[in-house]
Length: 360
Length: 157
Image 1 (cartoon, rainbow over the protein chains, first blue to last red):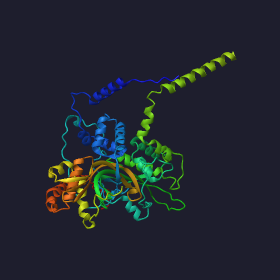
Image 2: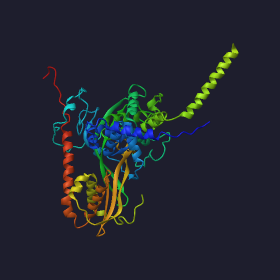
Image 3: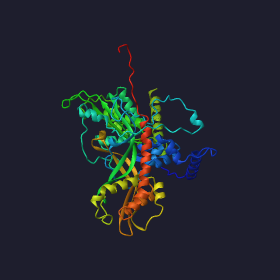
Image 4: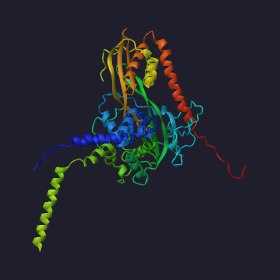
């Protein structure tokens, strides 16, 4: 027998009111503004933009406030919002060589044009809680130095000049877009990068870490990590030329990896690539390691069965919105499904008891 | 996207680089500053009302290789026509409709006799603000550039 059940409206309305009140917290404590979140929780904002796959710091800050700081819930809100926007077009590929860098480090070359620029980094801090932050918000202005006009070329460019690193195949092909067509396996590297850059930071980090621990080892060096602003330019068909439509902050990581060579390729270094919205360097480094691990087939390497080499495993589990949607749905009413299971178990137990009786 | 014949039928190819420069500057400008510099708008007809949308931002694999889709950004666009028939376009970052409208007005006015005056009263202040913002950030980054030095050890002179 199936009985349709309705109800719960009042409970739901009251739950939402309770949520709103808990979100606000103690009214004696000043309310957070969206601008405060945008300016002072900038790395959370960056993560929500990267995984929400929409660059808009104000929206990401609003989502964080609405989600009470639950970043996956905030990503969910951004993903839902972006589906309501008309697609006005696609930009020309951004030129990261022209990035106005605020941070640029290389683990492979000490002295390089443009230098090692530390930028606003947690590196070299002692990771001791700073109780001064609990007391006052005043900070002295950061020191400045004259800006040099020196170019900041990509590190891989030097290696490329000597043929020591694989050349990146040149193309202007329109890339596949997983927000428009469902992902089909096997994928291309372009589609993988799109999936990884919007993937969950924790998942991508763990996948990258697994390659470092030996599950699909790729011997990565951070050839270069750079963070800064790049211009976004788009062709405007009614104008007949391209214009800059804005400026976004990106983190880019290029890894340089060992490669013994193959039947067709001499021994040389190979590349892993990471590019992420905002200052998100952990994600950019992790992305480049996972990108490199997934390239085993193209480079003729052995598949040792490591999770990070398994394209289906990585790409189908990287999206935290898909993951949380399927995970959290099991808490919703499954009364009828469970009733069927209950009936089945009862019948099996009855059958087993009958057989035991008969055996006596 | 099919070009709308009403919008800008004959783009002037000679003036592109100058127009590109001011359109980019207007797109990156702070909406508040632009509104302060140009509080009153001249009479105009809206050809495409300010519309908020998304643009898919692309990167290149390895920084130089084949394109891939990085993620979207919010953009607001607007097209309008001044009383004298000049058409102004805008595509500006973010979701501020007034910003897109003002940027389209400035784009149109910059194609008229008002250009020299407007350059002085609007574009130059915007450019100055942007240069200051960029230089400030770059100079703070420059102060974090590492200067390596080598410690000479041992006895040999």
